[in-house]
Image (cartoon, rainbow, N blue to C red; front, side, top):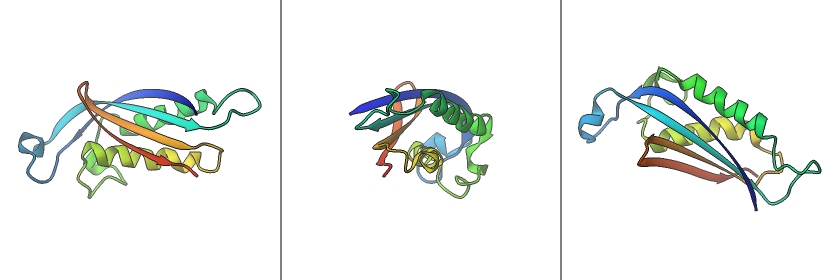
Length: 125
């Protein structure tokens, strides 16, 4: 199994719905977005996937969330914007461009702080 990894950061606000104490009020995070692509085979050029293309997609996604209220972002609005929900949203955004490209799985981690993250990992095929 091969894998490649890229990361980006973005600043965003949100508020949680439910019994989350102070996190039920609007607050912000410096989010870290980590993306891992895995696959069984390399292409003829010796790569699993063009890391520059992946970095561009991840940077573009992070840029679209930067200085936003996540509760107002299309696709997140109307959800409880937990780290798990944000990870799943980012997974969906990236996976739509990675399907049917010979890759095995995509993992997206969303770090709300250096000690806590949520992730989604699923097959791409």
